Length: 308
Image 1 (tube, rainbow, N blue to C red):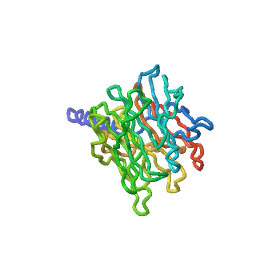
Image 2: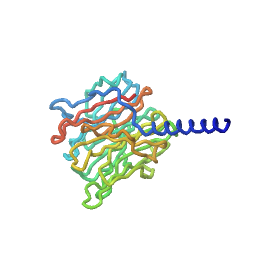
Image 3: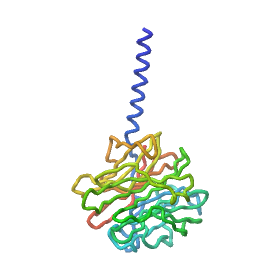
């Protein structure tokens, strides 16, 4: 009888362990999803709001500061600008009256605060749909950014873009995730998620990049969050080989920069939804993402969802 009881106890523990692991392979359930930002008609951001980075700044009367970029991937680099919005409840966002705060060649702004200073990472391009690089700029007030430095340089025939800056509270390191690839290559194109890490965000330009995941099909726009004991990596992909519909898929891992496996409930977003950024704010996992209202015309709005 004692042997049987021990067997049952071990079996119960095994089932519990398997159950816990299985749960980590499922992206959290969405409980709220709403429109948060759209471009002003005839304005500099009309119809093309595309990415949204949130910082808990607690500054100038606002708890949250948000930085948004535009689409214009195949257009002149002077159309690519960045704007600032602010909020106290993550729902009602007020646009900064002097937008844009970055006037040209700025796509995919992502911002983090460290020691009271704002650090913005974004992609610059040689031209429409040309080689890209990632730069970093600094600001004391979160509005005027300068001291621009190259973090990931241009490389012939390569895209280095879609940066996402993440501070990992579990180990005290800053991680810069980004997409690197040869999507314009005629033979054997590749899509990689790479990362740099550093104890000091200002030292990221000197760090070496290493691979997180790779694919032979479109896979870009990474973002990472830690929630419920699991790291989640979101990426944008096409729903099929027709390349007519964007989806957002998730990976999970117990480590921040390796071991990612696809979750079982993909796609997380599936209605021409892409360019997702993840944040844990007030203990809840939020995802900002770009929803396409007209793919042929490149029309986008920004939405935010909250998970259970």
